[in-house]
Structure formats: C-alpha cells, structure tokens
Image (tube, rainbow, N blue to C red; front, side):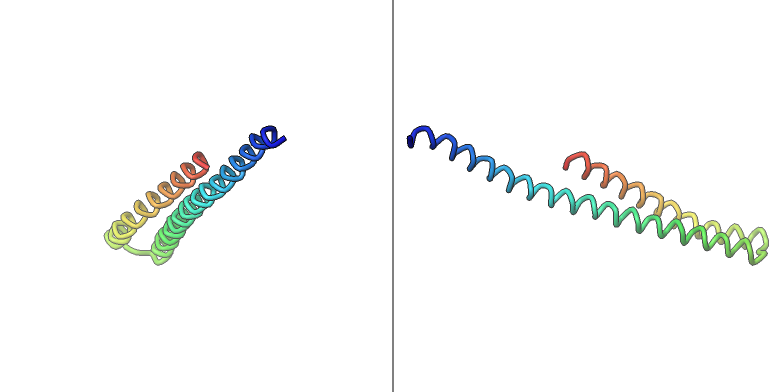
Length: 99
C-alpha cells in the first residue's frame, strides 16, 4: 500500500512546486508589463504636450522665424516621447510573450 501511494505523493509535490514557481515568474512578468505600460504612458503624455505647444504657437500668430524656433524646441521632445512610447510598447510585448 505504501509503494502505491508514494509515486502519487511525489507527483503532488512536483505539481505544487511548479505552481509556486509559475506564480513567481508570472509576478515578474506582470511587473515588466506594467513597467512598460508606465513608460508608454509617459511617452503619450509627452506627445500630447508637444501637440499642445504647437497648437498654442499656431494660435498666437507668430512670424515664420519665431514658429521655426518653437518647432525646433518641440522636435527633440516629440522624438523622445515617440521613442519612449515605442520602447514601452516593446517592453509590454516582451512581457506578454514571455509570461
């Protein structure tokens, strides 16, 4: 009777060990997914700020040279915001793929 029950108990032990391990890795990938979402949202806020700055500059009837200066100052912020949102989405995709 003991010989029959022993493999069954070992199998239960392995399953409980794997379920604990699966929960730990899922938590790690959940953090990666949420971190990527936060980075992506920061990039989205930067893009919205760029849109607002250009919209306000267009409404203020600036000269061509003044408008170029505003656009030249907005361009690096816009590119970095786009890169941040892209990087965040890539991190989210990697987290989903590995979880």
